[in-house]
Image (cartoon, rainbow, N blue to C red):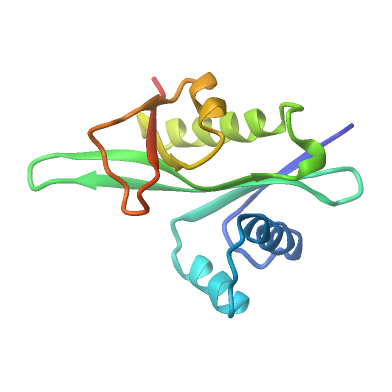
Length: 152
C-alpha cells in the first residue's frame, strides 16, 4: 500500500482535524471547542505536523511537533519536541509510526536540534526501541515519563 505524507504548518486540513479528533476520542479527552483548539494550534506558528494518508486519502497517522529551545541565562539548546503522535488502529505495527518518527527526527536535525524530547504514558517500548532513553531527572508538568533521544 502506498502512503503519502505531507507536512502541515497550518491545521486547517480536514483530514488532520478528523484524525486528531479520533486520537483524542481514543484517549477519552473531551473538547468543547474544537475550532478554538485548532485555531490555537495555528496561532502558535512553531507547530508542525506530518500527516500520512493512504491511497484513498484517509489518515494513516500523524505526528505533531515543534522546534523549541531550552534556555537558561547562560545556555540555550535547540530541541525537537514531539507533541502528539497517533497511528490509526488498522495501520499499527506496520512501520508507519517509525517512518513518521524518523521524518520528524530528520526535520529536527536539519534545523539544528541535537535532541528530541517527548512524554509518554503508553508506547514507551516503541520509543525505547527507536533510540529514546528514560530521563529520570527531568519532570514533565503532565506527570508522564520523559524520553529523550540524541539525534547526532
